[in-house]
Image 1 (tube, protein in one colour):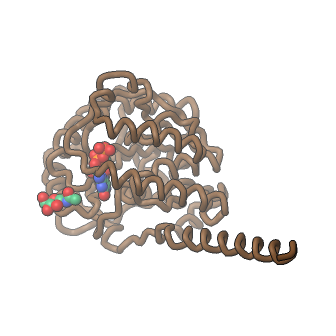
Image 2 (image 1 turned 90 degrees about the vertical axis):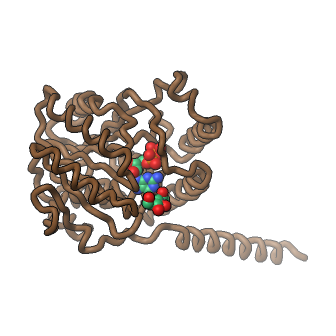
Image 3 (image 1 turned 180 degrees about the vertical axis):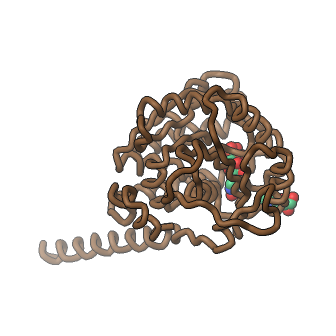
Length: 328
Ligand SMILES: Nc1nc2c(ncn2[C@@H]2O[C@H](COP(=O)(O)OP(=O)(O)O)[C@@H](O)[C@H]2O)c(=O)[nH]1
Ligand SMILES: *[C@@H]1O[C@H](CO)[C@@H](O)[C@H](O)[C@H]1NC(C)=O
C-alpha cells in the first residue's frame, strides 16, 4: 500500500470514529424535560382539591425565600424534616417571608397527599405541593421546583433531613457577601470539612471509594474547584436561578455538577459554606447503578457543553423575563 492509500483509510477511519461518537452523544443525551399541564399547578392547605397555578421564575419575587424539597417516596422522612425546617424559619433572626415547595417526584407511596396533611398542621406557612406525573429523578424534581418558585432566594434541600436546617443562615450571609443587591450568586453547603470525621468514616467502604473516584473525575470534568459538589443544600439568588435552571438538561443524580458547570460558564460566583451533616437511613439511592449513570451523565454534560450543543442562557435572556418565558 502506498502512503496515499494509508492516509485515505486513516482519514476515513477518523471521520467514522467521530461520527460514531457524535451519534452516541446525541443518542445518549437525555431528551428535553417535558412539563405536563397538571405539573404547573399546586395544592395547599387552602386549596387541597382545586389546584392553583404556580408562580413563574420569570416573574418578580413575592417572598424572601422558597424552600424546594424534592420528594420521592418520602412519607416516612418528610414529617421530621418539615418540622425542623419550619421551626427554624419561625425562629431565625433573619425574619424571612417564605414558601415551601414540595415536589413529589412521581412517588407511589402517597407522598403528595401526606404532604398536604402535614401542611394543614402549619397554618402560618405557605406550603405548596406539586406532583410530577412521572418520576424524573432528583435533578428533574429540583429543576421543576426552581422554575416555579416565587422567592428572591431559592434553597434546595433533601427531604431526608440530613442537613441541619439552621445552616441556612450561614448560606444567606455568605450570599450577602458574594451577591449583594440580589446579583446572581450561589452558595452551597459543603461537607468537605467532615471528610475525616465519624459521619463519613462510618459510611460504607463502597460509598467512600466511590466518593474518591468521583472527586478525581470531577477534577477532570472541570469542577475541581468545588470540594463538595453533591451536597443537597444549595442556595441560589433568583437571578442565578433564572440563568441556570432553564438551561439544565440532566434530571438525574449528578445534576449538581451540571449546575456548577453552568455557573462557571456564566461567571456566576459560587461560595462553599461548611455545614453540619448526618447520614439518615432510608436513602433510595442505589450506589452502584447511580455511579455508572453518573459517569455516563458527566461525560454527556462535558461533551455537550464543549461542543456547544448545550449552553448557559445568555444574560440578556435572564434580564428580559418575557423572553425567558419561552423556555418555561
Ligand atoms: N433516590 C431518589 N431520590 C429522589 C428522586 N427524586 C427526588 N428525590 C429526592 O432527592 C433527595 C435525596 O435522595 P436520597 O435517596 O436521600 O439520596 P441521598 O441523600 O444521597 O442519600 C430526597 O429528598 C429524595 O426524596 C429519585 O428519583 N430518586
Ligand atoms: C415507593 O413506595 C411504594 C409503596 O410503598 C413501593 O411499592 C415502591 O416500590 C417504592 N418505590 C421505590 C423506588 O422505592
